[in-house]
Length: 219
Image (cartoon, rainbow, N blue to C red; front, side):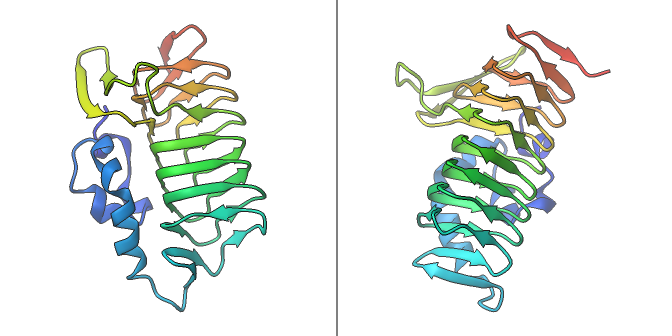
């Protein structure tokens, strides 16, 4: 329930060819920067404008004047990057996305129709098709003890060997307001997380994560 094929429909991202090389999504994190540069250089200049070196913005996208786009970055068709958004770099932002006011992105892949609309921090993470993060919800990408991140599920523990790894959100995942997703969190497809939760480990597909870490299957 936490492989790329189980979490994501790769038809909804420009990173499809890149992601098919891996089994687990976190394996892709270290190469996002290079992938964006290589992909950007293949983009049609009739559709994309390279607004600065290695920063490509689709001509139908709306980037507000106060937003910052760090390299490398690709902003897809009809996507909106709102006031004071801080895209630090290594961000592949898909079609019809919303990157909201004061949102910070770093080393991420956002599939098409992703919404991170209000005061979100998303770092070292991959957000699937139609994933949505409520206002103030964030990914925590480094453990307090600085040790490598481990993915914990009900059945096994996976040592990732990575010091920076935020969250993997499956397609249509819904994250409640002011929720913190601890390093190594994986949210399955069509799952919901209640507001103001502190989430860790793996949340199965079609589940609800409630306050106190209670997980129930959707009816």
